[in-house]
Structures are given as structure tokens and as C-alpha cells.
Length: 135
Image (cartoon, rainbow, N blue to C red; front, top):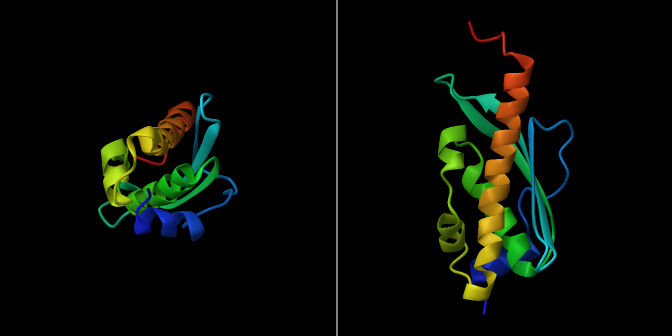
């Protein structure tokens, strides 16, 4: 039913856990199945001065597919610019875990939506602070 890649991400999740003082938090859930995901990001800058996802963690309460796709989305996003990370789609996540059964595609959607929500949360917080560090 699940690929070896998904099973590996479920059994050995990458970047799992709560993050202290995250720059952005995305919380998404599907009441129908009970899956809830939290994606935490720390934003830094690369050598070009672009904002990147310097660190990322997740907490997921759900099935094997929900945990596996959460782990995979953190791997896909880490080190990417915010713009690149925001473009990660449910198809990208599903493909990266070796495919998902149709009944579990909502898990890859939650993972990509959680990442987008964390990026949006960061942008709202930054706009609210009136970033004076950039000239």
C-alpha cells in the first residue's frame, strides 16, 4: 500500500519535534480523518541575501501517511528560498514519497498547505514588525 520511502519517513521521521521560537508556524488539519499538522520554520538568508528556510520542524498527529508526508515536506523545503518552498505542491510531496493511495492524497495536501501556512505566518509577523533591518 505504501512505498518504501514513505514507510522510512514514517519509521524514521526527519525534522520531527517542536521548535523553540519559530519565525513562522503553520497549523492545518482535516477534521474528517483527525490528522493535525504543525510546521515550524526558522528563516535565515543565503549568500545572495534571499530569505531561506534555515530550519524546519513538524509535529503531526495522524496516520503513517500524514507523518511520512510531513517528514518529506520538511526535507523538500529545508534550504530553499521562501518563494521556492511556497511552490511545493501536494503532487511534489506525493511524488517524493513514491506515491500515495488516492484515499491518502489529502495527507500530501495537508503537508504542502502546512508549509505554506508557516511561510504566510512568517510574512504576517514580519509585516507587523515593520522590518527596519532592510534599508
